[in-house]
Length: 221
Image (cartoon, rainbow, N blue to C red; front, top):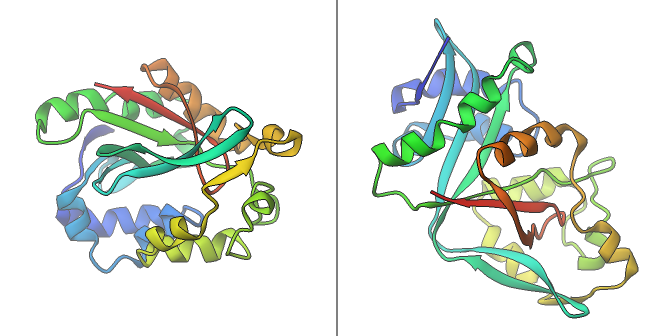
């Protein structure tokens, strides 16, 4: 098995890997009609065995800035946390290779890959997967969330409607006891990924994702 950067001609193998993923990025990769262009524009590191991919880590440039919530006094405020940065948009391994150190090796390739691509931003952030119950996040109640479930929200992202979602969100929320308890919660399956990112220098930024209040980790290379 070896690690390398995915090329546009690798699109069929990445689509095949995406068949094993859930909603979110998996759905985006499966439905993308321009995956070849995506691989040429973004930085995707893949774990390859012969003719198939066993895992991947994707980095996408966030040109328009990233919005997130941050506590300020007794309020939670929606603000722009990064103007230009790289987002870890996908971090995935097949179950058969988990627990064998490949997740760490994938993440540890970020630094060398940025050295080889000096035109990319040096700031890299990763928003942990949020906590959902039956497709609904408890944080949505505080936001008057405009979607019924995660599938609808994921579809909006795939269709490029993220800016429309952000415009609908409240700029400030009362930081009451209920909201405070939601901050920083994330899906249990994401814990291993969090430990891996922290082991290579990522740290909690104090920002929380607007879709689930999950922590955002960041590192400047």
